[in-house]
Length: 385
Image 1 (cartoon, rainbow, N blue to C red):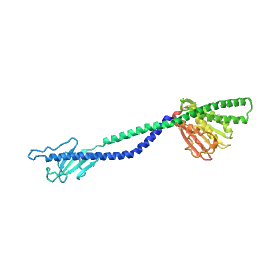
Image 2: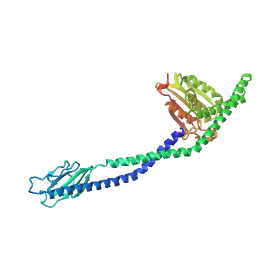
Image 3: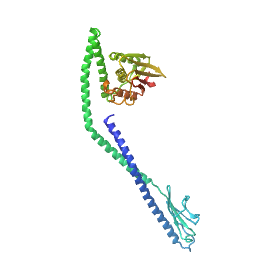
């Protein structure tokens, strides 16, 4: 994960937490504003009811008819003591027949008690309108949106500002590791070449075999470190690989390392055809599994490596009979090591996990402490050609 992605991710998490915390005061503010809006609406209804009463008071009975006041957004009506309409413009069934202001969802109305037999025999005047809280919702959302954007921008700014010293330090550390890797690779290559030359001219020597095995262990560590440093910057081109031959070659490569602990590698390799994958990434998966199997196996034990087809999918398994794994859920964490006495940096399986996740390769692990571990990889159908 690069620095930009890291800061954006945690800025989003922080902003989400702030937004959730703000929901409580915003809800209180929303409730308060609804109450204020409702009071304002009640005053409007009272105002309209007074205008209607005034119009009825001003009515001269000598006139032929009374023109009942009508309003665009307000509906009203006159009712008798039993709340039966005498004259009504309402298109809503009244639920609460009691003096005062009432609110039913988005329907608001006020019931005003009238003097007996004074206004066309009516006992009650009901004035109604539709109340909307859309403006309040809009205001709350705008406030929340503005706060979220402000907090997110501020979070990204501060996270990136705080990260600058660490970025500088990490860059220096990366440069140091790159230089160190280069310095290590050169003498390692020289040692390997000279051991091969010596073995060609002289008889087999157990000390040379041990040196050769040790350089292969170092080479595997070097390859992991090199991949870890470069993999995000490089484009890993996929090629067609005969996985049977490729696996056989890698097993032979580690045979000398296994001999150091008197470990026998048993192989049962079937033809699985051609897989379409990056060669370096496939090598990291296989090499780390073989290396770990050797590292965590007991001396004078065996390792079983199998390659076979099942349900039209290629299966690759590595079975050792060693110390086993106590916490299988942690072994893919970078720098995690269950047994520090075995050496290594705890990056091999982290690299393997990142590769198989990207390539959609399924992994099944079975492990029992002091009895051994099985790593079973199942390649997707589209991997085979």
